[in-house]
Structure formats: structure tokens, C-alpha cells
Length: 252
Image (cartoon, rainbow, N blue to C red):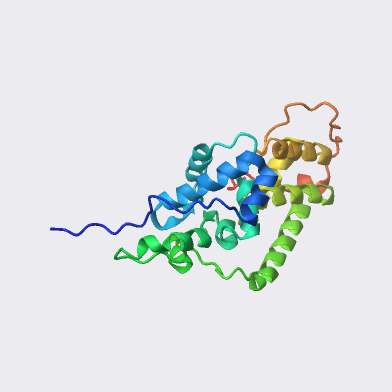
């Protein structure tokens, strides 16, 4: 007879009547949405194999949003705060994976009667197959990050001109907060091309396009719904814009 498969989920977890600082802060900032989001996240962690939630695929992230159903709050904002407070692992969340060491410690007793060990942080990193510093010390990555930002700024200036630089960088920061980044120079060039086309070569219109997407919490850039009050570009487009035209690039 084949043995029973080892269980890597739990049917329940401790819900203490006295809450700590973490839940107090979350509830103070997000109200009932924050309270509900946190306990639905814990429920999902408990019922998911190895107690982590992988949000790297868009369909998995959308499913989690639909499952938690927040009325007035962004789930991203709740999880960002959880990571800041140490309620979930900050390094894994930067890679769109939700894992709580405190939660795993609280359910560890359930594994004492099993033939399998309670999954550790190192186990999760191995399972999902990402190369991260699980101690959260990102000193080694700071120089590379700074160099990447410098290269991005130079690419934007070369593709669009200095007047567009701060506007596009604002969009890049917005995307980073959403855990969505442009991974290559090729994708940054494609972004610049799209912004140039949507703005008709006008920096003020480019800002309006970007503000529209950020205000609506959109992942992409789209044509303005209302162009009233946006100055039209001059007939003479700067040479730096004329000289660059790209198509077919990824990650726009």
C-alpha cells in the first residue's frame, strides 16, 4: 500500500484575542479592509502548500485580489506595509512572493506529529528558485541599482530629451512600487517610443498621460481621454526625438 502523501498545509492557525502592534498599525491605516486583508492572507498562507503565496504570475496576483476582495484599499499597499513592519518577508515580497516567518513559527507545532518538517525560509527560496539575499541586507546590490538608474536616465535623455527625463523617471518609480520593472535598455527604449507617440512629442502631454495612468492605478500607458488644457507640440520636433524611432520592443 502506498504511503499517505506528506501534508504541507494546515487546517487552522492561532488567532489571538490580544493583537500586537502590527495589526494595530494595519487596521489604523486601512480600517476594516486592512484587518480583513491580513487575516485572509494568513488563511491563504495556511491553506497553500509550504505556506507561501507566489504572485509572480499576473493570473495568480489577480486571483489573490479577487479572493481577498478589498473595497477601498489597494492590496499592494497593505502588503507593502506588512513588509515594512516585518509581518511578511520584505526580500521575498520584493520578488512578489508572500511568506511570513511569524506565521510559520505559530503553526510549527502542527508539524511535530508529521513525517515532514515545517518549511523554513531557505526551503521556500529553494522551492521557488530565486536568487536573493534572504537576510535582507541589500548593501551588495546598491551600487548595481545606482548604476542601473544612471543608465536608465541616460537612455531617456538620449531617446526623448532632458525635458522628458523627470516625467519618465516618475513613471519608473511608480512601476517599481507595483513590483513591475523594466529589465533591459531595450524595454526602456520601447517605453520612450510609446511615450513619444502618446504625447505627440510634448513633455506636458507626456506628464498628463503618466498622471492619468497613476491616478487610475493602471499598469500601462494609454491615450489621454481628455486633452483639454494640454499644449500642443511645436511643429519643429527636436532632432533628438526625430533621430530615434523603435518598434516591436517588449515590456512596454
